Amino acid sequence: MTKGEWRGFYALQTLRLLSLLTTMAILVIYLFIYMRKAFIYYSFWALLFTFLAFLFLLIGFGKQVVYHQLRKQGKITVERRGRSIQWQIGVFFYSIALPFCITANIINFYNFTHVHKTNALGENADDVTSKITKYARKFFP
Image (cartoon, rainbow, N blue to C red; front, side, top):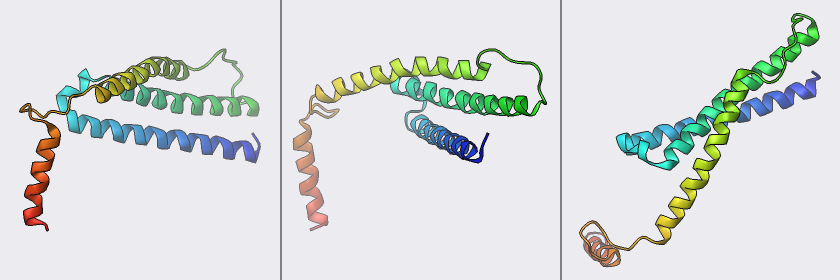
């Protein structure tokens, strides 16, 4: 690989690593907020499968590039056919994550557009908000 190709490889791997870390942070925050209820939401599974896809593709792509470099240098004489196992698992998780992401977005859109504006007591949410605002203005003029 030329110097420019290595820069591209490092840039792409760095972007994948940042995506992996960001997805992991969002997943941990999601688990912290919802605890045991997280497993019943489609968005949790979409995040989890996306995280696993990023993880396996990051490892698989790095192994593939190192293998090609060692093959060019003559340190490896056996030629492998096809992609690595990590690459195949990563693509598998991507193929699962995409339908979950689409389903979670459709469900969330449907819920947000058809939710009644009531709170847990059955009161109109706008009335409750106005009561809270009036109460807060007494203390914070």
